[in-house]
Length: 223
Image (cartoon, rainbow, N blue to C red; front, top):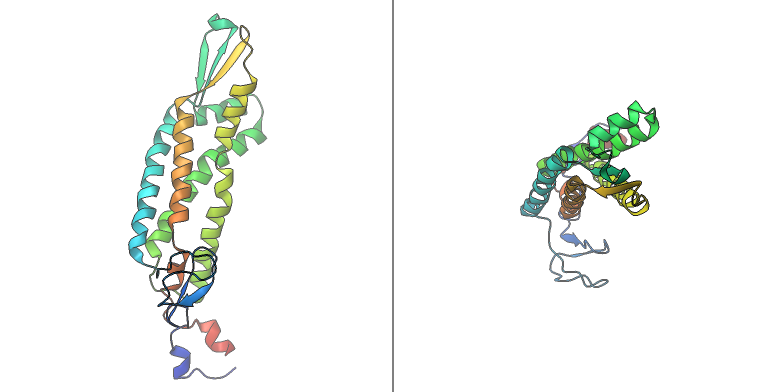
């Protein structure tokens, strides 16, 4: 270990400060004066905070459709040709009904996938868009990158409610005995998930590294 000197306070070298730009298609780095990637042909452009407008727009659309997805019925069930009437269940109503019948594991999965995960995605994407391009240490930048990777990973599991509704609607068509049809909330929930995924895909991860001003204390002590 040595005492920090003036070089330790130099900005962290990033691709942007080195005069390079990364391709969003294949990830290869090229000089800033290149118009297109020589490997995959994707048009090259430097990271710009104005691209966050698309992130906020898709996120707002997803949040708008998430509201009716929770208020409207997800499933409509009709038994004995309507002699016993029909029932409708929202997402939360379905979770409560599963708990009532003792299916705690299934209820937990539906609650996490349909409530916890979407709300968590809204919060994390809004936070990333809020702090993108702002000053950060290397450790903070890695934290933001891991948060973005987590959002992209769990995005594929966000359609579990829609899959369940589609499967039940296809299998439970017993005519006189019972029929199950998707409710209007299924469409709203699918659109909310799609818009949220588009919001995450619109986020430029290169903005995470634009705000690295100085070396972290760990970097200085390890040098």
